[in-house]
Length: 182
Image (cartoon, rainbow, N blue to C red; front, side, top):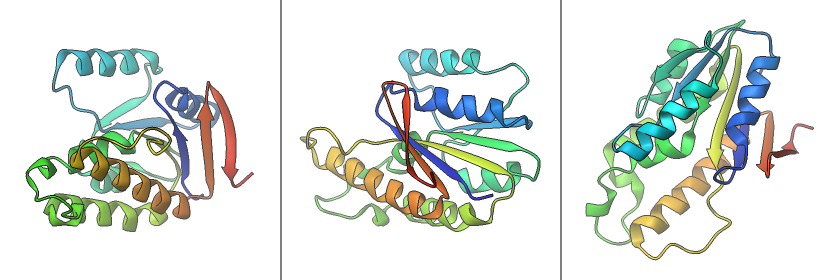
């Protein structure tokens, strides 16, 4: 079964949709989370997401080595949810603020390595894999070079992942719209 990508804006209902699909699969579920609790507000968000998930679901933290976590976790007869690719990307871009303007993200060794490893692993994963990502290209152009780099890399990542997925869904206002794989 090929992976599924669920896109949407902030608070669009994309994580809830992914959790609904995972629960409806009837399979044991593992959620791979990419967020890090670097401040109190993010810690509260992580705690809210954790309490929203069913108690029997396993959780794996993978703020950077997403490919390794997926290879270790995805299995026939299991459902794996990754929430979310956008926070993972932000983690990989750590240090980009120190790059000279217009330097590509590939200049960051962790970014280039981890992104390639993830994209290489994705089509080989067994079981059901549901990926959640933010669509950040619908808003204003960011003011800073780092903001523009993040927006551009998020768009590139979403395109690359969508090309590898059999189903892509966009969620807005809690309503899923299938873009690929009807």
